[in-house]
Structures are given as C-alpha cells and as structure tokens.
Amino acid sequence: MKQLKTIKIILWPLLLFGWTMAFATVLPEDRADVLYHRFDGGGVTVSGPSILVRKKVLDSVSVSANYYVDMVSSASIDVQTTASAYTEERTQYSVGVDYLHSKTVTSLNYTNSSESDYEANTLSFGVSQDFFGDLTTLSIGYSQGDDTVMKNGQPDFKKPAKRQNYRLGLTQIITRSFLMSLNSETITDNGFLNNPYRSVRFLDPSVPLGYSFQQEIYPETKTSTAVSLLGKYFLPYRAAVSAEYRYYSDTWGVKASHYKLGYTQPIGDYFTVDLSYRDYNQNHGDFYSDLFPFENAQNFLARDKELSTYRSQSVGAGVTWDFKMNFIGIEKGSLNLFINYFQFQFDDFRDIRVIDTPGTEPFYKFNAMVTRAYVSFFY
Amino acid sequence: MNTKLKNLLLIISLSVLSISSLYAAEKISGPAQDFTLKSRSGKNVRLAEQKGNVVLINFWASWCGPCRQEMPKLEQMYQKYKDLGFTLLGINLDATPELSQKLLKDITVTFPVLFDPENKVSEAYDVESMPTTVIIDKNGNKRFLHKGYQPGYENDYEEQVKQLLRE
Amino acid sequence: MNNFFKKFMIVTMIILVTGCSIKPWVKPYERQNLADPIMSLTEAPVSAQYIDHVYEAREGARGAGGGGGGGCGCN
Image (cartoon, rainbow over all chains, first blue to last red; front, side, top):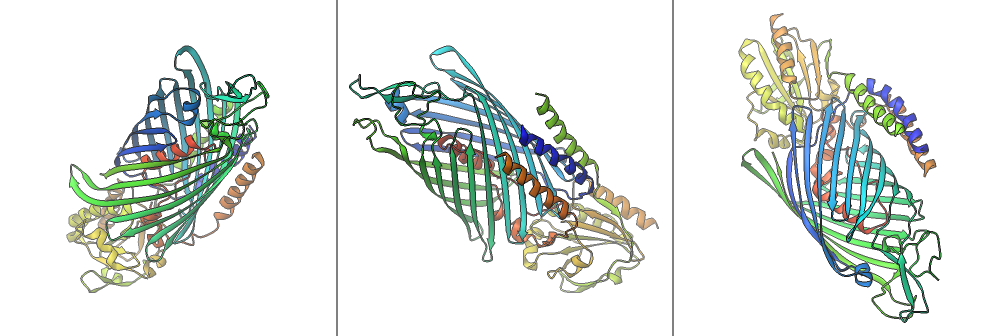
C-alpha cells in the first residue's frame, strides 16, 4: 500500500534520530479499575462490567489485563421491523505489555472478543517516543484483526473478516499551559463486512406493505482514514478546556466529521467535574438507500442506519471523587460517574414501524443514555 | 504477509536502536556554579560553603512522579554518608514553594531542602529533565550528571559518591 | 487520503529534523500545569475504551481516537 511505503520512508530517518535523542518517558501507573457500563436507547440496552488491572513487573515492564462483558437485550428498530427481540452476551479479554527503555515505550496488546455469532481476535503493536526536551511525542501503531462472522441458527455459516489499522500520532506542547495532538488512523478491512441478519427494502407493488426485503450486499473491501486534532488549555484559576475535531472518509463514500468541546473543573481538593458537548455529522455511503426502486437495483445494497445521513449530538457530565487510602498497598483511588445523553436524527433512514406510503414514513430518531460508573485504585 | 513482517521488523529495529543509544548518566566537568538559596529551616544555604564535602544536588518538583520515587533513596544515602564528608541538597523547583509540601508531607527527608521558585539555579545548571542529579567533588567541581530517575540509579549515585569520597 | 498521509509525514519529518536544533521552550521544571491530572489527554482506560466503543458501534466513522504525550515529561 502506498501509505505503507510513505510510513517506511519516514521510519528510517527516525532510526537515526534514535541515536541522538536522550530523553526518556515513564510507564503508565499501576492501577485497578472496575467499571459498570450501560447503553440505553433505540430499543437496545447493553450493560456489563469492565475490569482492568495493570502492574509494573521488573523495572521497565508494565502488564495489563482487561475483562469486559456486553449483555445485550435488543429490540432495536432493525430487530423490530425484520426479526424478534433477542438477548446476547459478548465477552472480551485483553492482555497487554508495555516495555520502557530509556526513551521509548513499546506496547503489545492482544484482544479476543467472542459472542455466539462473532469471534474477533486483534493483535496491536505500538511505539511511542519523546523528543525535543519531551515537548513532542511521536507514536506509531499497527493492529491486525482476524474475525469470524457466524449466524445464529446456521452452524455452517462461517465467514472471515480481516482488518489492519495503521496509526500515527503527534502530541506537541505549545506553551506551559497548552498542548495539541494530531492523530491519524487508516483502516483496511476485507472479507465478510456486513451483518448477516440485516436487509434492505425495495419498492414492491405486488405486496400490501408496498415494499419487500432482501439481504444486504456489501463490498468485500473497505479502506477508511480518519484525522483528528485536539487541543487542551490550562486556565489560570485551575481548570482545563479542550476542543477536538475529527474528519473521516472511506471508500464506501461515507464522509463524517465531529467536533467536541470539553471543560474540566476541580472543586476543592477532592472533586472534579467534567462537562462535554459533541456534535457528529455523517453523509450516507454510496450504495446506501432507505428504499430501493426494485429488487437487486445495484451491485451493492445497504440500508444500515449507520451508513445513512445523520447527526448525533451528545452532552456529557461527570463527577470524580479522589480519595487517599492506605490498605494492602493501595495509596489512593477515585470514584467516578459519567453520563452521556445522545440524540440521533436520521435524514435518509425512515422509521418503518410507521405504516405509510413507502418512502414517506417519518425519518427515524432516537435518544440514548450512556452511563459509566467506575472505581479506580492506584498502588 | 511479507510487507507486514517487514513493517513489524522495521518498527522493532527502530525501538531497539533508539533504546541502545544513550544511558542517562554523564561525566561532566567544570566548577559548580555557586548559589545561595533559602532552606526549609528559613536559613540561607550557600553551595561554596560546602567545599571540602562531596555534594549531591537533586532538582525536583512536587508534581514529578519519578522525583517521588527517588526521594526515599536519597534520604537513605544521606543517612549513610552524611558523617563521612557528604552532603545532599534537594532543590525544589515548584513555582510556589508551598506546593513542595504535597510531596514532603508524605516522604520524610532530613537533608536540606532548598527553594528555587524563580528557577535561577536550575537555569544555571541547565536542567534538562525532571529530576536531575548533579554530583560535585570536594573541590567544588561538577563530576557526574544524571538525567531523570529510573529505579537502580541510586546504586550509581552511591558508587560515584564513594569514589569522590576516596579522592 | 494517500495524499494527505504523505503530507502528514512530510510535516512530521520537517518538525523532527528542524527540532533537533531547537532548544525546548518549556523547561522541564516549568511543566506543573501540564503535569496536572486535569490536563491529561487520556482518562481512565476502561472509561475511554468504552465510550470509544459506543461511538464506533453507533456511528459510521472510526479511528484516530487519540494519543499520549504531554504530562510531566519526567525522565
């Protein structure tokens, strides 16, 4: 791939720079976190735990492990209109190791996610290096995913989906109160990239409903690139304000962008309040349509609302309570509660739970509440 | 497959090479710049008055994690060698000296803690990392410089101090 | 996006090459604001990973979540 060649061209001089740079960094601190997460909206409820433990072993190695579960009970609009409500559980395990050697942190991470109809395995590699008096941090990352898509009720349905991620990041300290971060990620997938249960609809005057369904057909490859820019500023009375912008585009014709504003305010010695607002906009993919004119109207067909034109706005608020303790090596901890409220509005995906002339149903919209409640311990 | 492997190898060699280059301790030379700073006790402490002793100067700040790790080791060293012609000066670089309490109330140290809130001494010593340790011989000359702190550095400090005490 | 990638790389290269001769304008002992936990670019990993997962699952876009760096710049 061309991007790969460009990356290589840059990496060789970096090797030379490695000789002259004399600055080191630190490993992430030892910690244990227990999170309860919950997504409630659009007829879907997904909740579960996420537990992380991280510890330094030997002077320059930090290991981490994460256990994550999604318990899904779904009666989403897709499910309501084409299937029946279901419950499901997805379990994910991750293990990682970070190695620090004078100036460079090298990370390796393996994740396995499994549910009754999807198995995913991802291996990630990353290198992070500080330069110029530690004012600049450059990081590069590569991940490889090997997934198997299955279908409940059809044991012989097994399709592969492979994925490769290329990440580049540059964080730069601008002044003693301001820093910025530029990140880019290119992802290539190939294999079975659609949802084996999802359908598209097409005009069908031969049925009373006026439309009929057929299986969605997706291309077997997809390449996407996202670039984000983040800035964070320290306000003199001790607070932090941040702004983030990301632009995304892929070979399926989806173009999206979002901006996010954040504000962090410590209150007293023990409390911190976080506020955020995020506004996401997306244009539909090339082969997307809410209603196709007839069966097999195109080579590729999609009616996935996540490929439609829509806007998602969310507000978030969080409170953190920091506490000190002295118990079996634990020095301090924090109790955290974060709530995000989302509003999704679709411009070309219709709510077909409403029976009307096909193509005139109201556009779909839904709200969702996302909760994160977690406790962290540092030792 | 091949390009992926090449990529991986490239990234690994990048890390290895940048790893193997510099060890963060240097032999330095030249007279140690004199200074007078206020200490915790309220009294002024002057570097030139320490001539005849081996002096270890440690630049630190309350918000610096590795400084927090290093402090107890410095205290141990101070206790061991202070009666043998060695002194240790901890220079706090916090913009507001009161912030030094964040670290000092958790870690008890008996060596002199001096305050350099205007960062004049750190500027004079060209401090390039946090923390920074400078070891000065009995004649008032700078001999060793350590940038940053990784567990195990205290062993090097001890070796170097013992060497200078023998001179 | 190939074009953009190349430009990003070239800019990074220029920064790295010229940066060698530039003296850090924020001294390591002037980083108390940047070292403050409220200025961290990443929140608790379990929390950040989860919300990123929500975005990726509900939205068409993915990637470029964020990096490390900043902070106290110790060692």
